[in-house]
Image (cartoon, rainbow, N blue to C red; front, side):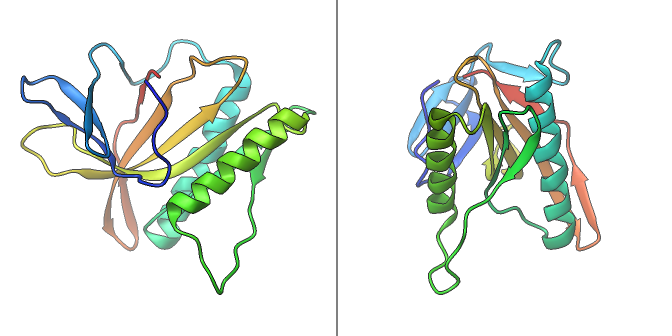
Length: 177
């Protein structure tokens, strides 16, 4: 799968005209036959798992505190530990989620190139429609960027905000690139 347009995060899954499951990136439907990975991935490198766990846990904390998620990142430093990837925000000109994701991605790429990060992950909200007769549901995506392994899938964690005190997390899945 190609890269998504970071300025427009209107990506979601739906069924195409012939019943195949597709992912929508802006106005284009891309078929996903054979690309879905439900439940547990049989093998995952330890540093990918550490990034995934960190981002999932922080996303759940954000959901519990705010009922929503804003884009954020995390990275594995040269010493092999997970760190949050932060960007400073000018409160007089708060960037859109797309702009914030672009900034995180640019920082991650430049820091990996400079040798200050081994790899990084971006986390952002998406809207998913997995069944043709159901409305879209909210989810957060964790996109691990590893130059040494381009086969790391994008992980999706659907959820429903039931109330301010209750978030219903659905089974997660991953989509191969």
